[in-house]
Image (cartoon, rainbow, N blue to C red):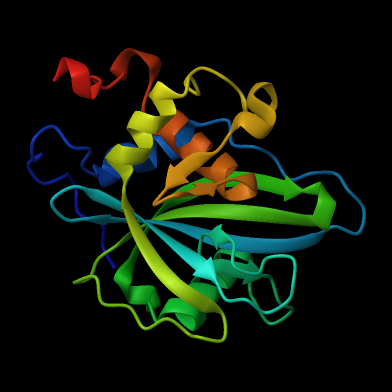
Length: 213
């Protein structure tokens, strides 16, 4: 799909997507490079944003299948197969297989970089897109237990309130986690969110706390 050139009007100060600005930020960013680890397996995920009253971030809860990723909160995506032309095409394919989102419903915004998971010998390549739809999804129950949309503004507030801004993933270590409906977004998913929020929310753009609004 063609990308809109600007965000819609903000509602009550909530974060809204400006596709062109995000494309420019991603193009100029020093994205995490691919790791030099022999034998590491490659995976690709889509970090999908949807513009409604405020910007929503699309996550999934993986189905309980008895593997290392079972029941984790994650981004749609999966391992790159030999039939995939490249990692981006793998991200499109997996997103369609898992959630029924077609290629033409995604405006590609850019490459967020590589996020290796050393304990699983996997390199997760993350791409950012703008999902344009009415929010209707068709999760594949064999792979997805639940599709979850969460306001990007909520994650952004948590990012600042927990002191994650201007701190690297390495500095934060196991502290890096975002609460979500009584659970925690952690691991590689939290690292990807941290990178996205750090890119979109410079230190001079700290949101007001609820007490100051």
